[in-house]
Length: 142
Image 1 (cartoon, rainbow, N blue to C red):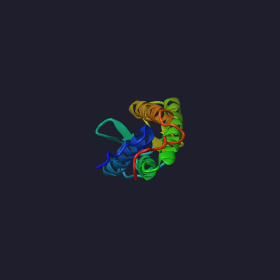
Image 2 (cartoon, helix red, strand yellow):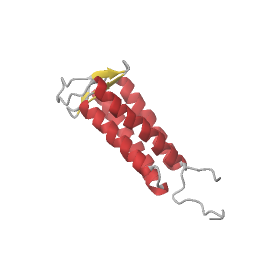
Image 3 (cartoon, one colour):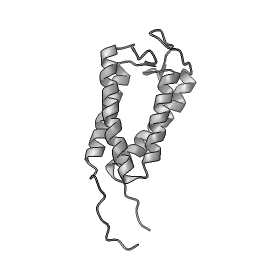
């Protein structure tokens, strides 16, 4: 039996994909509202991370895309690098809006969210950078 080997980007896409999809689904049990504006409703998942319906949809979509890309070497690398950049930009934007802010009047954030987004972004850039642009040729028998 041959062991399944994944690139760092594929592992990232799988783990982050599962985590974000689960977080998005769980978030709807805390706050399913799709309210907008500075006073948008929010609730803290596990008492820590602010979410609402919009934030949950972003997590679900990000996670499902990661799961869809995890099986593809090139797709996972693009996901890791792309989401690394996107999540770092979201973190910077969140820090600009501040603790308790609402990005674009839709997505509530707090400092804990922003720190988590920095970690997800850095991990994505690391995983994408640690994955060669093309897989190494195999010499194993088919």
